[in-house]
Image 1 (cartoon, rainbow, N blue to C red):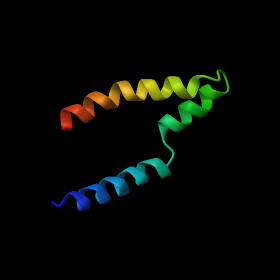
Image 2: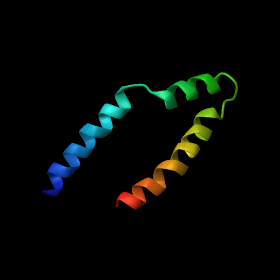
Image 3: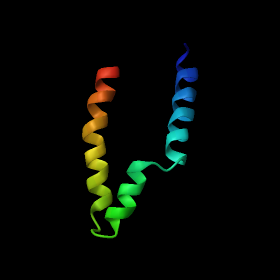
Image 4: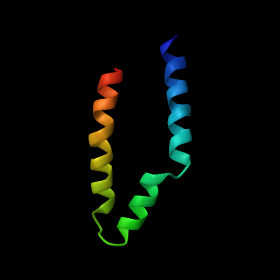
Length: 58
């Protein structure tokens, strides 16, 4: 598979996940009412789960 095709597919798949709100968005909105740092904490927690998955897939 050519690199450009792969990157195009990766962007389309990523956009589908970004455009549709999910549980991470709901938690961020809910916790954002309690703390101004909630968004950063949710992003860090999400990254802790995602980075090992990305590395293992790579």
